Length: 208
Image 1: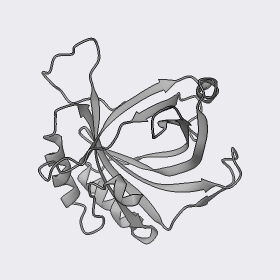
Image 2: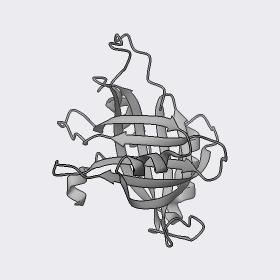
Image 3: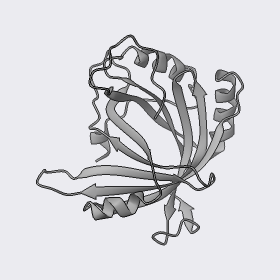
Image 4: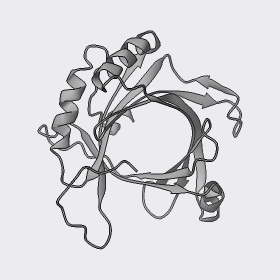
C-alpha cells in the first residue's frame, strides 16, 4: 500500500480508512516517449520503475445486485515478490470542488496461493490481463503509464496481444479519508502534463 502522508489524525481501533484519489487519461503509442520525458523532468529526473504484472479479477455473487470484486496481481518480472490482493470501493465523483475521483482502497501483500484461497472461498475468476509499464513517484503522488495486454489462451501469460494502440495514464494518491486537499496538488500536477495527456476524474458509469 502506498505510504500515507504525515497526518495528525488519531488512529482508532488500530486501522485507518484509506482512500485512493485518482485522475485518469490515455496517450497514443507515438506520444509515449514525449510523455515519459516530461514526467522525468517533473519527478526530479528520476528514472521510473518498470513493471510487468499479471492481474486476475475475481467475483463473488451473493444476494446483492452487484457481485463483490477482488483483484489479485503478481509480478512477472520480479520473481519472489509477494502477490497482492486489492479491493476498490465504489467510486465517488463528489462535487466540482473535488478535482479527483475518490474510492476506498485496501491493498495487502499475500502468499502465492492467493488464487486457490479465493476459489475455496467461492470466488470465480471473471477475467485476466497483463499490464506493462512505468511508475513515477513525486512525493506521495504515483503516476503509472501502462499498456494492457489481452491474454489469448486463459492462464498463458506468454501468449498476449495489445488491447489498444494507447497507454493508460493514472495519477493517484492513497491517503486517510477526509484529506480531500490532496486533490488540489494532483490537479496542479495534471495541468503540467497538458497537452500531452489530459487527466480527468472519469465517471465509471459513463463507460457502461
